[in-house]
Amino acid sequence: MPTKGPALESRLGPLKRPKLIGSEIYRSSSYGGRHPLSIPRVSTVVDLCRSLNWLPEAAYIDSPRATPEQLARFHDPDYVAAVQEVEKRQAASEVQRRRHNLGCNGNPVFPEVFRRPATACGGSILGAELILDGGTVYTPAGGTHHGRPDRASGFCYFNDPVLAILTLLDAGLERVLYLDLDAHHGDGVQDALGGDGRVLVVSLHEAGRWPLRRGEPYGSLSDRGGGWARNLPLPPETNDSEFGFLIEAAVLPLAEGFAPQAVVLQGGADALAEDPQSRLELSNRALWDAVAAVAGLVPRLLVLGGGGYNPWSVARCWSGIWARLNRLEIPERLPEDGEAVLRALSWRHSRGRNPPEAWFTTLRDPPRPGPVRDEVRRLAAALPGL
Image 1 (spheres, helix red, strand yellow):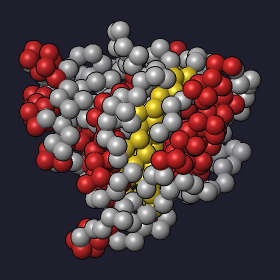
Image 2 (spheres, one colour):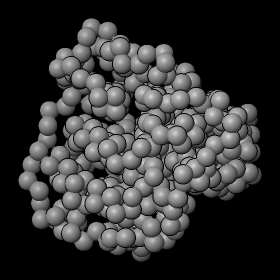
Image 3 (cartoon, helix red, strand yellow):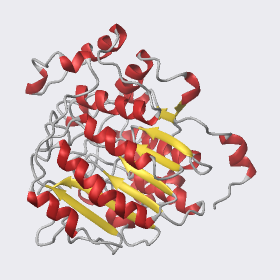
Image 4 (cartoon, rainbow, N blue to C red):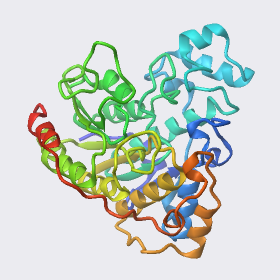
């Protein structure tokens, strides 16, 4: 079992109930314009949970900002310095664009281009520290699983899941399960840690969706990364029944065989039916059930956010995750204060012009069951063991 020094012990104190890490930076910060991440997410989750009396002050922690030295545990110091410079100048040079993918390919320059992702990393690092003695921490700003050591990728400037896992390993843990439920493959985490026998990297994602590599079975069933990655590429229109089947028949047995001391779970909401960035057909219940199933496996759980590009479905899904982590009852209809939070949202996407009333009044989606197709059963049967 890992131990912690007295300075860390006194700073953290006992952790008995789940904690949620957030920051006001997400309330005022946006990727800008029509970028998919122009929508408010973390601030809406915080407001919605507070409106339901689910987030007392004792459960909320304001996120620190990761220092350049902390970021350099995984990221190239020259790259970290480049992101800081780009924020200061509010422009990326041609060299920075070409070498670090800044200011292009979906990774725009915006006023908090360093501070915002550094805050997400600070929250995930702190979350990993907080669970060392056991417990559950939720940091919905985390989950930026595409970030590379020396460049931005897929809207991700830094890779907070990797930094969180490294924090756990540095503290002495020897078996960490990383489970990625985002609609997009967790490529940055797999490439960083998929060859480290102390980490089992498992990703459920939509087959044939970015990120892809020409000529390589990237994220396919046969892709094992460096040997310690397992991938379940979901067919389009995967339903709740199929997702639940894969969790029960494939993921949980794999996890139990690995016997993790901690789980870091990326709970991206872009696999939901209402999200414009995937062709999967899940309800938020499917993700809630998956989180609850995994939460029962280990004494240490760090839950991150991730993708999610419909502001209503993200807020409703991630608030429900917080409820399930706390074993709170989810009301059939939201109170007036909760409705007001959701009615105040807007979305420039075509689906945002006439949102259904349920997006304002409920958290729980209608279930989306269906047949478990043969190809899904074959996925579970063919998943390589350890």
